[in-house]
Image (cartoon, rainbow, N blue to C red; front, side, top):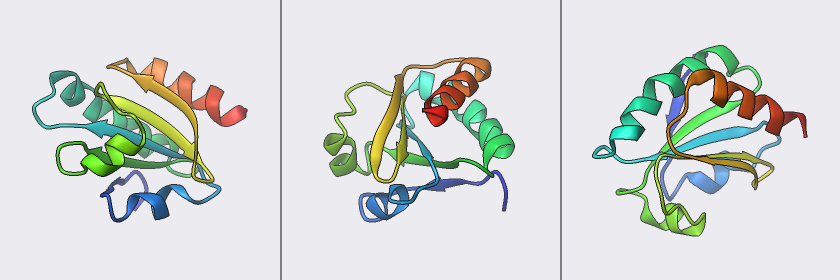
Length: 109
């Protein structure tokens, strides 16, 4: 279904980010206030941009291995991947327009 946000785990993460289609990942935790603010914006972006970008969330409390592997030390941490490689990172909450601009700029490179 268009606009779905996938829940990634330590076991599924590597396979998820390995493709040529960019994958935008929200590293978050339930107790994180700024993460809760980013959540609805992330879903809106997924609904608008799922044709060109895959959207996924990683709960850092439940998937510490993946969070550690990508040096996620502050959340929300939004990382964009293509072909298994990080191509952009943004830490902290931001409005939809800023995140959309970040995605467009990173994907264009």
